[in-house]
Image: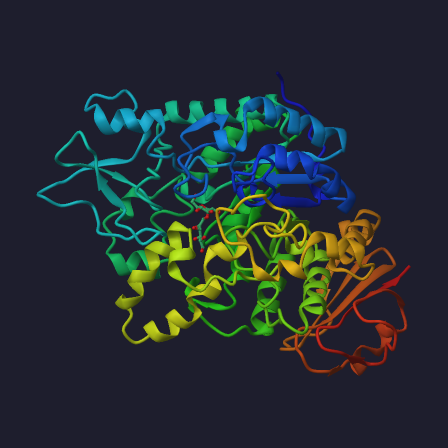
Length: 555
Ligand code: TEU
């Protein structure tokens, strides 16, 4: 198949992220599955989204919920079969919804046959697929801890002095992209799924695939303080991604969005600059670090709107392609309601709508994470034994390493764990929230009685209605799709207000990020524009009520 002219459809995409194990369980085993997803396609179509991103559905021992793949060419059996997946792709297509798959190729599972062979066979032909080092004078290159707080080196079973490298769990051995044979294998995986009809990939920790081995001697502290520079944005990153583009991606009308951890604006600009032909978009996390010290969520700090505005301004203005990925939630983050200064109790509904409007009309491609559209909240789990996520379970005992902070860190621990985003989708108020007929793998939130899809759909003023409005508005607005961006209130800790402009048309968003009334008299000029959305009824004076948001247009 030759190269084709890409339509860049992703610029008009509205993406919904599905976390399959928590979305919908069709066979009552407590785990979501593909047939469950199929049963909800009409619902997704009714929202108006035109693309879904599926978190991994591949065969996997699920040590990291599928981000540890043991076979890239088949489905995790409890989720279904490859035939089910094909049927799902076809049904999404019928509804005009594209599917992008999660692509996890920085590491495999330790149960992948390549690694199993390497681990047991000293002469394995796959040895060079992984990053293996021998101890020299009894020493490894470094003593780093990885992202999941484990030693990054683990000994191979078949050797006394050879170790493999992993930034995540020891069950996630890191792949060696320097090896051209490995890169050919990755291309095969991409082609396989693209040929089955998927429209692209969300590329997991993609800026980790090239590493700077010359810095592998860095001390522990240096790794952290230097933003993990030996392992992120390595010297051959652009080259590898261009190779994938040239050999595979340019032959399909597809899109890629790369998750870039500790990604910086200048490196992101290289990745998404269309002339470089690497990625289409990146998921940058700067805005998620506004309530964490030094980018580490365990070091929780109070939210300040000013910090968020600074980051939003930087990326809205600074990305060369002009195409940001817009997101406030995903499967690794706690829920947005109750975060970013908002309130998940008495002002939950207003907060959820306000956040929705505030990010959705920025410049870029919006992503919605399952449950966000009904304002799902953080988990009510408060016992360690009820958590499932490897990251949290590994980290908890390490809190003791921070004697001065441990009290503080324990207090905020449950608030920041990834399981917050992973509780079962709340479809209705039945025992297991309509997610399953038996006990789910992770506890359903008790608030499913009032926070669920059925309830929200029945309410003309429900949060879903706001998302439907936003999706529709976006699809039909040239200003939102292609207009410029500017904040109209600067450096403020309460009001988040911006203007989008194209030709003579304008869209203005004004949001109150606090629970207090705020005067917006100085924005009077815009208050005379045509109001097209407000999350309160009537009475639109020059004062914003708690978490109020308004959208005005000038045509
Ligand atoms: O996440 C990358 C990543 O760095 C996260 O582990 C992040 O540091 C953490 O979640 C913040 O709390 C991706 C996937 O999104 C995540 O689910 C996987 O666990 C991880 O890669 C490994 O594949």
